[in-house]
Amino acid sequence: MTAPRPDPMDLRRRALELLQLTDPTAKAQATQALARERAQGRCTLDPAAPLTPAPEQPLPGRPERPRLVQVLQVPKRSPFTPEGRAALIHAICHIEFNAINLALDALWRFAGLPDDYYRDWLRVADEEALHFQLLHAHLQSLGFAYGDFDAHDGLWTMAQRTAGDPLARMALVPRTLEARGLDATPPMQAKLARAGDQRAVEILDVILRDEVGHVAIGNRWYRFLCEQRGLDPVAIYPGLVTQYEAPRLRPPFNLEARASAGFSPEELAQLRD
Image 1: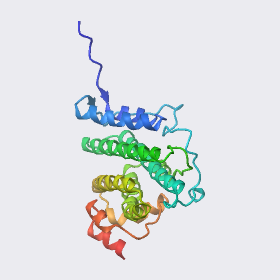
Image 2: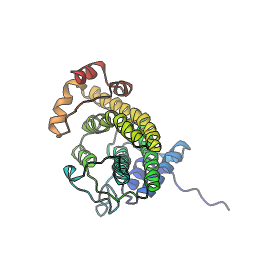
Image 3: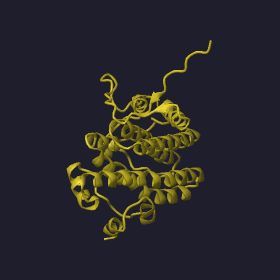
Image 4: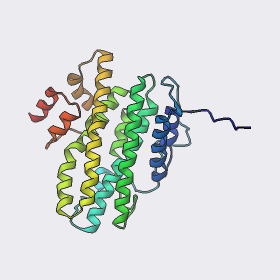
């Protein structure tokens, strides 16, 4: 007698379960497995399902290390010493671990959106998991591991502030905080190239390529939600920055990457000015 197949898992419910995992490697691998299961049709999707995190499992799940400190307490990282280069790679690795959490949170938290919204954020989570794995493997090749250096919690802080409104989340996480990565990556690659770390440069090529797509997804759903509410996406943005205490944008800007990620000519002109 054939054993009955288990009921297919719900995508949003599973994303919440993965967000609560504390082991970074297990979280990355399980996120990639979820993307495969969805591609194979082994996930259901209920956009309207009310979901509640288990109170005894704080969000997001994360390991005891790295120690989280204030932004200004994280020392400057130079790639021109072995430990400084490892600390810089660790900082990027920490960003990518947080990015897995941010994508999983966007997946489960906001109900009632089109199916494509959830498919988009599953793709982001899958790619962020790959980024974390690439960086962690490189960090280990330098004799260190994730958790060996202090880090800060700025990305998740903004996720907490915008937890009640998907429009604010789209405005201020992918198209503000993550878009800063489009600006910062080429100068960082130049430093790492001068330090002789070609593998890090190659990994950042992958990340930059994918992050253009992630910011584009943020732009897509920000504009969708603005249109749904009858709001002008350009006009309301400064007020959201003020309301949620988002970081102010500072040059230099990677205007080419931002254009590829879907920022409008008007938005790019404002950055130029």
